[in-house]
Length: 372
Image 1 (tube, helix red, strand yellow):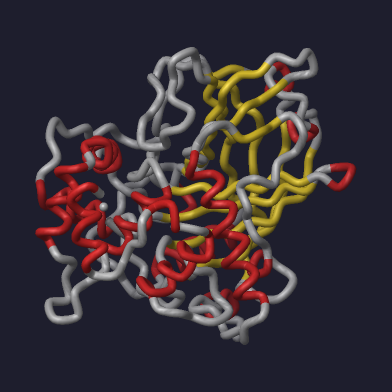
Image 2 (cartoon, rainbow, N blue to C red):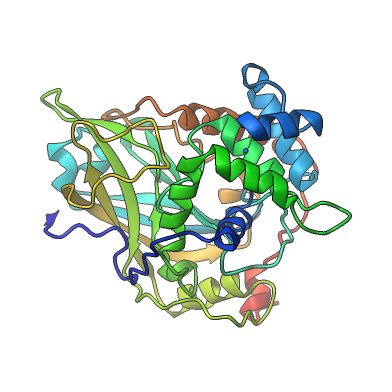
């Protein structure tokens, strides 16, 4: 079934602003867990944050994430605070016209998922403007899997891994002031109009009240190839069937987003529709900061049903590496430099944490439900 009227944020009001204030920009950097390089490169070299881009290996990226957030043994280096989930993916069969991937054949497949907050601190307090994550591992026949890690913003703020790690470094609060260096952030914005444009898009939407009614975006473009060998560029998003409600200014407690998710899942299954957007000639496939035109054709490929959420522990999503390059035949990466970087850093982070001492997660599902 095709969606007749593609919308960027189904169930969410459009609050597009004509301009982005400096305050909004700074808040945006904080909200996405980070904030740099021309001018900024000079500052960051001086402060020892960033080596020349050609030296930015997966190990370097992972080391810098640890430097920014601190090292927390046993946890992911980004999106450290999270909950495991389990459920199914049911395909409509409608995406078979653009991809031969088994995941799009009419069938239901088991899913392991993970909800998370961006940032590398596993015990941080929930905040409405922190970017939320939804990762999935769909197990398919013949040993195949599809893994994807999505976030609650429609575009990414950086085009390259170098920009990402610099922005993250610049967002780190100065120990003397408790705030990021605003001169450096202003310099960054001056050198990166693409980031400023992406921030306008991010700030045009009000975060939803919880994980359960958030839309999650894959951000990067992939090549979908059908049985006839025809290939098209595709981006995807997960659109909730739970009604949208805006976030409130009051944050009852430090785990309120996760507690809301636990309570919502206890009341019944939670579902999201997988909506594929098909790119056209000229649509960028190497730049996650730039949206495709809203009139692009879409296909509803299926739905994800989350039946339960669980405290992270051995045997569930805690020990899954949601490497975005684990793909079934029929889906392949394109030319986005962020994809390869994400994959390599995820692998490096996984390798480190798998051998580290594990510590209890911040959120205990049983305690929230009054079971322990």
